[in-house]
Image (cartoon, rainbow, N blue to C red; front, side, top):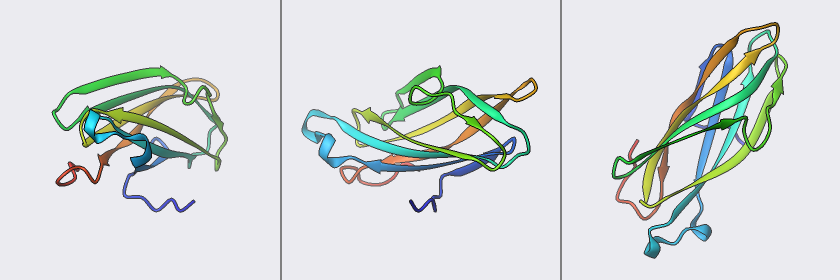
Length: 135
């Protein structure tokens, strides 16, 4: 997969790259259902092993309504990343508007003790059913 994406951020030695994709086949604009998949790559650029323990997402639709989603790990896993390793996963989100924006963070446990917060870059959820991108 080509990971050239404008949605990339490095925090505390952890790089997060996101690629959103509008899912036209799963969306139903007439019923105000717009669905996106997003692929995430988390890369440990630091020199210490980390474990992703929790995630937090802020999902905002075109009307400004924000939903906060928190939980353990990602896609049912709490990946462990040694220095130089990456973890990739795909997830998705529905909205009732044709565009929106997501931003979030991961809480990671550092091998040997301590925690770091890793920022997930804000990324646009743009569909062909909207006049223009939000971000």
